[in-house]
Length: 512
Image (cartoon, rainbow, N blue to C red; front, side):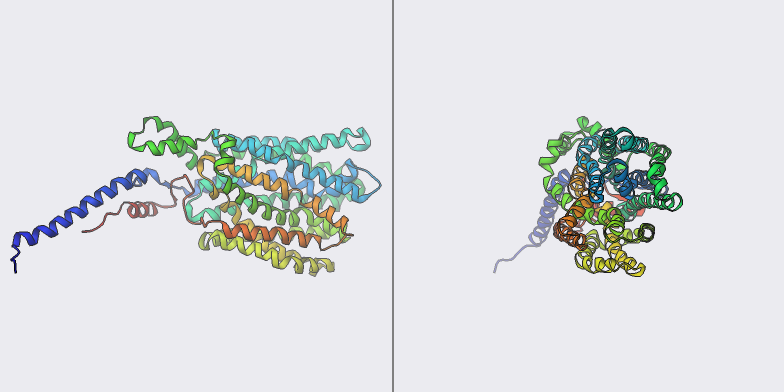
């Protein structure tokens, strides 16, 4: 049997070890080109007070916008009589809701304009511009003479200023949700995002509260003569407050880093050619056609999610007061009080839902909300149909709890569908297309369907269930994004310890 020397016995293991090291070195070289190791400067460490100020300013500005928009919803019956007098109450109401829907028809145009603009010049400037336009549009509605004074010019001017409102709002939600998402640490994006919807509810609540006070103190005749103007005239001062808050904001860290990467791209070394090519293709000034062609799968998912979400949202928060008063002949003051109580409860619970979707994921909370509407819509409307204070409150509570799961989660889930370079534009286009087609038309469609089906009071329940079914399918196909960095943005953490842990996990070497 051949004898193996001591030198041979040691050289083979040494040779294998050296080969493994060479292979690992080659693997690391390839991996570094594809996924460069994280450095301390590649991670955003958020400052909690700064994040809270940014979230507060975005949410309060959003509240101002939706206060302006909500006023029209709660004065729909009165505005129908002021601008569209006719012998038929249904025709007058349909005309009023049609004008309400007109603003939503131009929202995709606003989103297509303001969204890519926000990707090119930044989120802050565009959000300030939308605030100015919304406040001016709402203020001017309060100054329009009635139909009795100037005839057809009255509804024509109303439609014009509603178009201004809709165009400006097209850049609002996409910008505000992008702003908060890009400021928030990855593990708390759901919590901070929930404050955006809190701002929406605060705006709606403020509008409903003012209308309630005016209806109670002035009475129907005074409201019809001049009282309806007061909520619209408040929009001017409120708009200045919102503008001041937004001008004090700094640009988001994610967009600042993206701009810095674009500025230094020409000086990058040759080994980053592939990465430069990718960044160039997704620069902030990406054209609308590129968004539609390169990100259409995410756009379709966004439209499906937002369509289902907004039908349920507008059905409960915008249409329900009219449904209670005009269809069920419920006392107008009692209906607004129940809606105010429902929204107040939702506002208090929203941060809790935000924490829950940070912990358990966006998909479980969204699925719970969609299934809630699918299963509980008929029982809820049967309770509302009974007409007593207790049954109406219980029915509203069932719908409100289902909506709560969507409200507290959607503002964190939607921005994560798109990369930083086109996030504002893509989200604004997808969101506003869905709202235009489904959300803003909800009161008009439900009113028309009820009229077509002999005032069947269960039509809103069936319409809500159809929307929820689409939502269930959409949620089932989306990816989980909780506690993960936004696509195209560096990791965002709250502490130095989290940053060091991420760097250590990315750069760890094998032990031989």
